[in-house]
Amino acid sequence: QVQLVESGGGLVQAGGSLRLSCAASGRTFSNYAMGWFRQAPGKEREFVAAISWSGGTTNYADSVKGRFTISRDNAKNTVYLQMRSLKPEDTAVYYCARHWSTGLGATPHEYSYWGQGTQVTVSS
Image 1: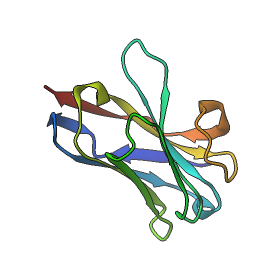
Image 2 (image 1 turned 30 degrees about the vertical axis):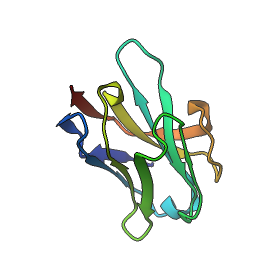
Image 3 (image 1 turned 60 degrees about the vertical axis):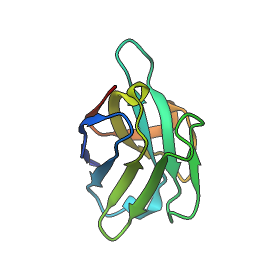
Image 4 (image 1 turned 180 degrees about the vertical axis):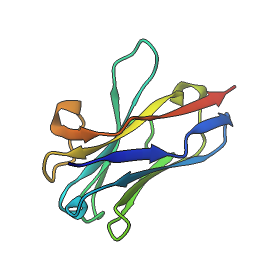
């Protein structure tokens, strides 16, 4: 069974930075693409970023491009989301997820496993 555990969320002022981590259980972490999504109150879950199994290819939502960086360390079974120049509209619960295969899709249904989420709050 795959388990994903996010950490690193918190309260930060606008313009600040946070780094989220997602630790995965299981020996097949490096076989799959990974993604980050977020969900604000009253809104649908939205794609943030995805990274290929090797880390060589990434995909970002337009709203975070140039501010967020996704990376992974397959030796540590961990995927990261470095967030810079945070804005109040980035406030949401952030989830990491494992893609069902090797794609970099932006839709939730392409992801088989999800973490419990970590809250990010950006104050103005």
